[in-house]
Length: 155
Image (cartoon, rainbow, N blue to C red; front, side):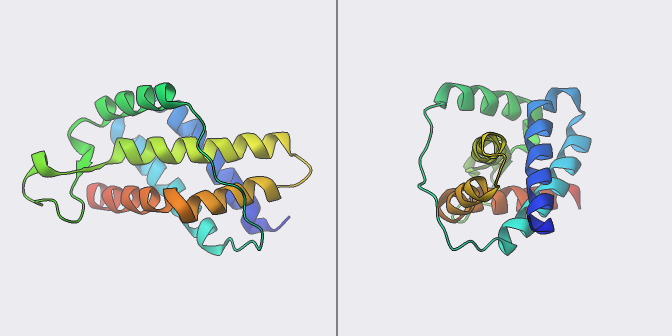
């Protein structure tokens, strides 16, 4: 297996564990760790270029997603919202971006591939293919939004 894939898979595993245990952290140290992991994941996904694609589907885990989103939103407080294109930058009430939403979607998409990787231990190809397809169709926007928001908050 390519070492870039190993680094990507390790970062995804650490990201999922960090999200699952967010309540053990103070907010800013947690965000710094999330930022570091998302940078590695973003770099790894940019390098990932498989010839095979996976079927992309959404699992019906909406209640669990909503619960995590609500807990993250409360944890992040005023740090959660940010303006997207078309929002009034100086009016927080008009901000439609949400770091909690970005992290929640990333967590569930990455965790699904991680679970597939753990089941298919002989080869990482099914998980990598699932991540690549999901990245291209859905979660790349969440990754870029989260990275941009974290950059604005932490630097």
